Length: 193
Image (cartoon, rainbow, N blue to C red; front, side, top):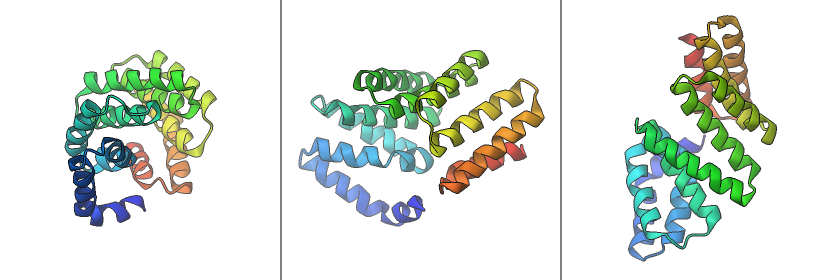
């Protein structure tokens, strides 16, 4: 539902971001850009990388709560573009910043992203530990849907296909319940493969 709002307004969003940047309103531009994290990752990661990199370079004095959101968003956009090492490095940086801020949901989310990278590199045991820690810190349908899909992916790679399908189905159901449509679609595609 959120993308149905954002997509038709892309030109206006870009104009607003340009307005903030040209007016040297780095904090406002960063707040706006970071709020579009899911849009950058799913629709325009290259634009997200360019924009967030520039804002972080200019935003040395950003409040820590905003800086970590921008770093998290940049890391996600880089990772989705296949720049795994740099994306993972920024996600690790965001994890440490969330720990310093004491933000459990942020810690949990970055542990989830860490698990995705560990799984990609074949370290399934470390990935599962990271997912367990994430689940313990933040029990929400949003986090549970993501954790279930990643666990399903790992379980499938370990050869436990029936269990993997149950986890992937659970992820799709949870995502559907909270209207997290692109995640639901991703879970259904994963299950179909």
